[in-house]
Structures are given as C-alpha cells and as structure tokens.
Length: 458
RNA sequence: GGCGGCGUGGCCGAGUGGUUUAGGCAGGGGCCUGCAAAGCCCCGUACCCCGGUUCGAAUCCGGGCGCCGCCUCCA
Image (cartoon, rainbow, N blue to C red; front, side, top):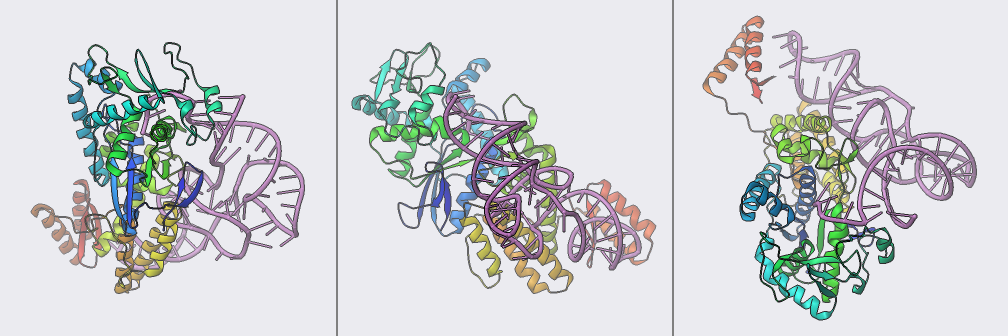
C-alpha cells in the first residue's frame, strides 16, 4: 500500500481510496499560451511516475488532467498576434502533447478543457452567490474567504497570518485582499459567456473544482500539482468546495521546484527553461532519469551538466539492454511475481516506492541490478543475467523508463563496412580495420566488438 | 513581518544514532581487447560552524552562519 506525503496534513500517510481497488486523481494541467517549460516537464513526469506505480500496484487509475484554454495570458497573446484565443490555445496544446509524447508521459484518461465546462462553472458560482459566500463587484464575482472553514489549510497558515502578508491591490474593492475572482466581468475585445450575474469569463480557480468534481465525483482520492499551486490555487479550489459543502480531494500531493542556476526557474531565464528545447537537444529519457534521481518533493537543478550526467547514466542502462537485447513492452508495467524475475529485488523496490515514492533509491537498486547482470554475463551465467535484465526492464518500466535493445537497422552500405571490418580483423589487417572503424565513427556510429563481430549503435 | 525548506566526498544525489557499502557521473590503478568500446575488479573515508545529549552523531537537541522558497500570475 502506498504511503504518500499529504500536503494538507504535512505528513506521509497511507493513500486511502474511496472505492477499493480504484484511484481517482486530478492533476492540474497547463495553461496553453506558450511552449511548455521544465516545470511542466517535472510535474507531468512526477505524476506519471505516481500513476504508473499505482497501476503497477494493481490499482485501476482514473487520471484527469485539464487544459486551461482561456485566461489572461492566452487573451494577451491572441491580441498581440492578431489571432483568436482558440487558435492560440489549439497551437500550444498541440505543442504540449508533442512534448508529453516525447517524455513518454501517459495520456490522461480525461482531458477536460475549461471552455467546455463554463456552464458548470456558472452554476457553481450562482450557488456560491446564493449561499452568501460569494459577492459581486462591478468587475466580477469574488469568494469571501472569511466564510470558508479552515482557509489556509494548504498554505499551512491561518487566515489572519496570510492576510497580514498579503499585498493589497488598491484598485479592487475586495472585502479582503485574499478574496479571489470566481468570475471576471466581460471587457471589450475579450471572450465572454452570458451568465445571470453578468457576462464574463471564469476565474482560474473555478475551473479545476468544477471539472474535478464533475468528472471524478465528490471526495475523489488525490489532487496534485506543482508546489506553486499549493497556494493560492489549490487553497482556493478547496475553499470553493468547502463553501459548496462538497467533500473535495482526500489527499494532496505537490512536487518541488525546478531550479536553474540555484534559483527557482523563471521565465526570464535562458532558453534551457523550455522543455521543447531540452527535448530537442537531449534524450528525453534523460529528463525522466534526472527527475527520478531526486525525491519528487525536493528541488532539482536542471543544467546542461546535470542533463549530460543523466544521459551518461542512461548509456549504462542502454548498454545492458543491448547486451541482452531487451526492449521495453509498450504501455504501463503491471507488477508480477513471475519466477523469471528477481523477487527479492522486486520486494525492495515496492518497499521503497510505497514509502512516499523513494525513486532515488529505487533507481539505485536498478543500477545495482545492472551491475549484477553484467557480472553474470561476464561469468557466462546467461540465465541469471536474463533474469536480472528482465527485472531491470520491469522496475525501470514501472517508473516509465524504457529501453530499446534491439540491434540497430543498418543500411546496406553501413553493413558492408562492418563486414569488411570483420574480415580485416580476421585477416589481422588492423590498419584497414581501424580505418573502417574511423569511417563508421565519422558517420555517427558507436563501434563495439562483440563475439559475433562488429556491433553498431548510435 | 508571518510560514516553510535546504546546507553530504571533484560533480550530481540518497541516507539517518554505531557495524559493510547508497547509486550515478567524472578521475586513478588493474583485468579483458590487436588497439579501442562495452563490461568487470580495486581506489575517495564526505557530511556548513559552535556547543550539548550519548559509550558512540553526518544522523537527536540548542545556538549561529549561509542559501532558497511561499504569503502576488506561475508547474
């Protein structure tokens, strides 16, 4: 059974399930107004790993992650580029999925779009107004957080203390600076929906409550996202659910920051903060490896060096995959106790993952198994090596790390060079053999000698 | 001002009262190889500082220093 840190209570505790054997989870998705950045990559990887591990554990997971396709940033970009909001959102959503596919992040089971749930949001806001926990101002509808029991739960601070530090926006006559917009009144040249409380568009915090409760139902199991969403976004989602009298997420999970140059990543920093950019420059699996290598709640440093370090780690895993010609099966891995894998290692793995997803140690375990498999191969114990290799594929696969150990497809010319080199070596004409090796290397191949002759890979 | 996190060997990054070590990368030595590559073996005796608790602390407690974050849009 998985034990997972719950931000709401500040401790690791068992992930309890509303329905036995089933997990309902909602992870806040992107606002599609720009290319995804490294922070997006981290949270999607972290929750992909969690999801895969739950599946591995034999649970039936329903994973919902939204696309925010209407907000200030989208409107701003549409205006600047003289396009519609829909065009902007569609373009960046496409780029989003491209990146997710490269990262091998499983697609959500459901991907609600904010604009498709506006009716539900309007109904929710109307109910909050009716209950008297929301109030109307000329520029929109606000939630009165003072009427919400336990406001500050996720922030870890009581309302008073939050209020003391809040910045005051002089332009708005909110009752409290912490009150937030449920609905933003229509402005010229902005998309708007008709509503009983005036035309406008939904505030950000409203969509996720409405979509998560609509799709997963009251009291769903887990709500996740980046640490920055803890407050105010998740706090405000929860506030609405409380104000509605509906049970909300039972467990809250947040992943740590992506750091660049020792500081929280920010948009003003260099190009390496673009996930799209990183995925074009490096093996996408390297980012997953980097993410797995530190605990999901700890900050990670992403630099060219840490990525390169991860890529070299990947080389070691790939080398074993090639040696044993291991290729990961498609789709998530489901745990088994087959006799063809190392049961003791699997048990260690499960114990580590069950303890708040200790992926750094789990990864250490995988690397240990790699070493053992190599040793077994060197000792000629192929059956043991195969068993260890199968375990590596399984456990790494449970965290979403995949391998393709199949021999590279060679074109006729390359194959001819490789064969010529084998012949030269057989004839002990090493000068010719080395020249052929140089030629192959110049063409981008890594050349290795194996018992069956020259082996090539990229 | 309120709240929170972090400080480990050349680098990244786990760990937590003691014994045998996380793991990866880089580096040195060796084996293997025609030479390489891959692989294997050996090598680092680290834990911000100062006190304290303890038979024993990197690990617990107190103090200090440094770094970072949240309280505002942000994954």
